[in-house]
Image (cartoon, rainbow, N blue to C red; front, side):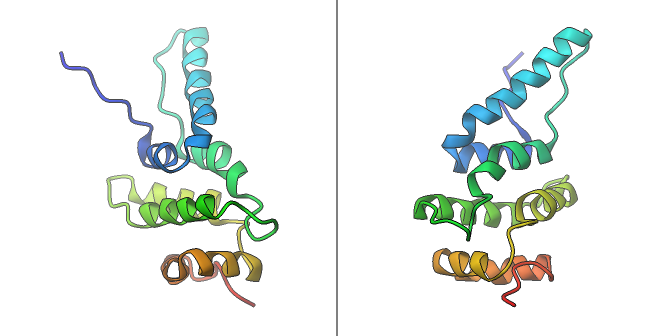
Amino acid sequence: MAAQPWAFGPVGDLAWQHFPEAREQIADLVCTELQGAINADRMPQPVDQFEYALHAVGPLIRDLGLVELDPDLVRRFCLFCRDLLGYTGPDEYEVSHVLGMYVLDGLDGPPVVRVIRQADPQLIELVRARFPRMWAEE
């Protein structure tokens, strides 16, 4: 039987791809699930997608618009958001929900919009098209 490649799900895979600095947190989430499965004598389950957004991506970008972040980190965050917005797999609704609720929620208002506009102005319109009340400038 051929080995299966590792996959963390769409949010986890994109977090791994775009945020190397979050890989330790991703590994911790996976290891916690594996240890829980060992302790409960059950098969391991995939880590919920929101966990990657909350624990791996969130700490990196939670101060967006409040403090000066590395421009490369902001650029990679924009790519991460674009990739999630463009995701069309079978769990598309879940991925969209995770993006809106666990990635973008709380990142709003003029300071965030200014930072994103400098890095990726078109992303603002893409986010507003999907989530009309987000990234308002007023």
